[in-house]
Image 1 (cartoon, helix red, strand yellow):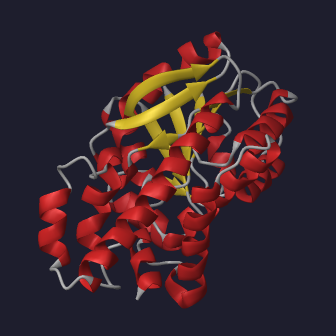
Image 2 (tube, helix red, strand yellow):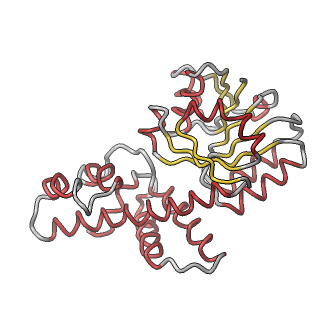
Length: 281
């Protein structure tokens, strides 16, 4: 299939590579000069012009925020009727439903398919994908989705996948903040946090976030960036908005969100999200 991939960031580029390695033709669309150069160095044709996507069978979208998705849809006119868009960004149920209606008015089918697993699993084509939308549209884009990971059908309606991702990001936000607090506690108790991490991560109190982010929490501010603090400010904010919209109580999420905001306010927004631990120092 001819695939256009919009958003060749830290996670988007390896996703696009997996699609290309599965035998599909891929053109990337990325506004950053550095991002385009990196993509081309990795064998992905890249353009700064969204019109490179006009003739694609499938358009995969990995922009960062609901506002960026809305801006993209506003720019992309006219569109090819029958084209399928797969929104894989975490933008929340309301945003994806609104933009899907706008795209449907142009004859474009939309699949809502947010992912979890981070850069590490994007590089191995083993992301977990929460896909939702009409069955015929899901069937059409499945050859592209399976190149990137394990597809779980979240529901028949666009927005169901985003709703599940909201639940996922609630857990990720709370687990990440809890991991940071626990390792900070270990240090305050006079223990070696690295030794504590080694001992507890396989026990009942362990979590994927503790095992994945814990080592980087101990490496310092300049550790490599796989997901920025700003992303968790955004994602935990989306969880809070969704919870408010359905009158759900999420006090633990509120504490975690506050910590990510504190980290961003301290100038750590572009640092790895593991640096939230610095708000305990």
